Picture 1: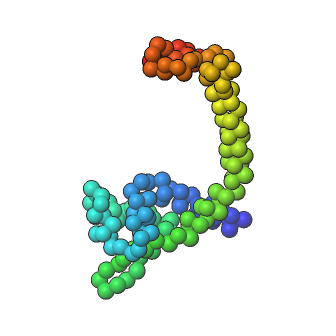
Picture 2 (picture 1 turned 180 degrees about the horizontal axis):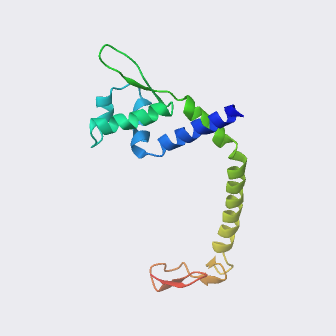
Picture 3 (picture 1 turned 30 degrees about the vertical axis):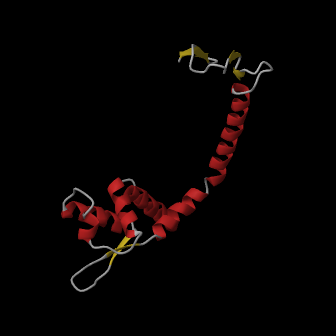
Length: 149
């Protein structure tokens, strides 16, 4: 039971860290390789203490590790919490794929209805028709309202 609670807490901490755009930008920078705090702070209009707080939040979530290189403590990305997020999200894949499939079906049916061709060479819009002979002239009909052109 504690393992599940620990996993949930770790996942919550990871999501909390990822919720901030500055932290996501820091992770994107670290995905290209190690960097010092000064290097990570360069693109932001934040103080070094503010960047350090962001890095500490990323460290608490296990997304960043700090090494020791002489007087430097370069930061590096640890992607294992991101793998946990991916594993968690994967359980919902069948749900969103089914919804996308239904949305595709609905869109296909809608396109057939809205943009079918009549026998007179006009494009049908739902129940009405609008001539395509002079699209820039007059008004265009839609199933809901007339749109001036």
